[in-house]
Image 1 (cartoon, one colour):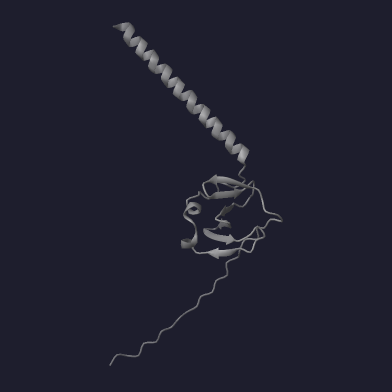
Image 2 (tube, rainbow, N blue to C red):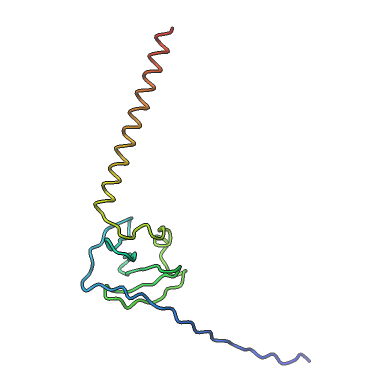
Length: 132
């Protein structure tokens, strides 16, 4: 006869402080990638995805249905993939105009590099044909 087995369930309760982030009115949002928006120029990154406000803090995700707070913890498997892929801190104090300016500067630099490369290639071609 097998000894009686007792199933012992331990309930471990931990308190996770929820963010106190809230806005008096819906904040202005900026699209940072398809389906993902961020609240502009905030110390804490607050994203909006599919109508939910999302915030990541200390490796945990929280969500709220509205701009007034009411945050709840979300398990990792419940966080939308586009949010998980975002680099932590990349959108802190995010400003649309500054990003657009940096993007245009990068485009201009790439254009200049392509033009320089094209000119060097043409110079080599001219030298080569001049030697023959």
